Amino acid sequence: MQDFINERWLSILAFSGIDDFDALWRFQAKWFEAPNHRRGGWSGVARCELPLPEGGTAAIFLKRQENYGTRSLCHPLDGVPTFLREFKRVMAYREYAIPTLEPVYFGMRTRGKDRRAILATVELNGFVSLSDCEQTWKRDGVPPRPERLRILQAVAGLLRKMHAHGIRHGCFYPKHVFLRVYADDPVEARVIDLEKSRWRPRLLCALRDLYSLNYYCSPAWSRTDRIRFIMQYLGISRLNAYAKWLWRYIVKYSIRKRVAHNR
Image (cartoon, rainbow, N blue to C red; front, top):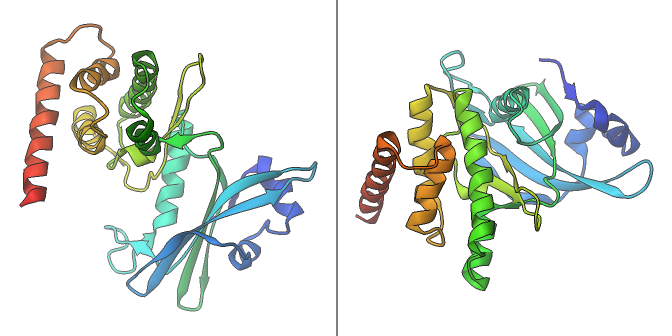
């Protein structure tokens, strides 16, 4: 597969001398997350502040892995690099204009018996995860209802757009939803960690992702907030039979999951 380089970032990478695979692989950067190790391979993420040719800096997340893959029907033994799968999902989301990460670089190389992959993406500057928002609310108090409604609208709209294209995220947790909240403007929402995304019928998308978000969301969201979210997601102003069934399914499945988890 040919390397991908975002044209908007080509001059920035070249300015730092890291506009090819080998230079990015050798680039010295502190780990943002401790590398994961499995089956003789590893995968890690570093945050890098790069100088801009015109002055200032811009941040990217540089993800590198070696012999770290996911098995598939086409690759049952050695698997495929997880970053390849994630890169393809990022490009698919962007093709459908679903707000997500902006890719900077992707490439793969084989060095002897070792398979390496690099994926670089732009830092979501000014965004915070929904999970971090909930931690702030836990400490400082839940925001007023109008702000909560704007957040609900943004996240529900994002999920509705994904499912309209038959895309199921697969792990739509608060830590994977990022928000940029302004005082009066609409909230911006983006989704990350796309590796487990799959194309599925819309109902299956809804059942999985709505359950995941409801199960992992903070208690700061009231029952009324959660029902409003379902209504925003469905684009309705009053509960109908389908919305009630969907809500009951999500609640029932969440309870069953908690019971199983506490055994």
